[in-house]
Image (cartoon, rainbow, N blue to C red; front, side, top):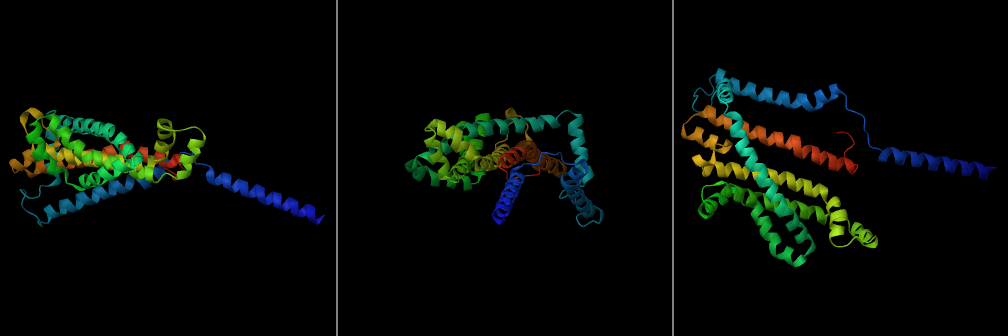
Length: 296
């Protein structure tokens, strides 16, 4: 009788353990309440922006900075933005830079992905090129603008060359870091199941290395955007069109701080928008599929 009770108790404990493990593995798919979204995701940045604008306006109102050539009022910057919008120029500034940045980033992605996989698989090439990539990643992107202008001239090819030199090392190193973190057991299991060569790379290595790869993509975009702004500021030329970097340089040449702040705010807004619309959702999706992010 005691043995039967012990068996029943063990079975109950095992069932409870299995239920607990199932609960841990279950991903919550319920929609986040609107109020929670507003208070946790929308309200904090709105409050931060309002605080910055308040401090900015206070510097003008209390004459802490009373020289408009050094710090324009928020209203002055708004008027410049409104004027550019009404004249149909604002979207042109943004599109000129965003189209260059995204195309350059896509080219960097096409080059850096096979390069990162090659470095991960061939130790001799990694030993030879790996330190150079790390050095290029730490090199300021603005350093590539003068030689790119000399080699390619003042054209869009020069812009893309600067973007590639800034973004490729970051993406390749991010993928390389992700591959290094793949457990060796995954590779052995793949070989046991017949996944070798390109099949193993596509079905095992890349999916397992996705967190590091996505982090490299995110950093690669940041380098792409910064490299492009440096190229547009330094290598300004009328035939290239007016991008955000050119707009910033035009404001400096005209000593128009309202235009300078307009360009800075647009550059910042585009960078934040691309991160929020592309890379943050991609990163959350990768983490959620691995059970590392329960709530979005």
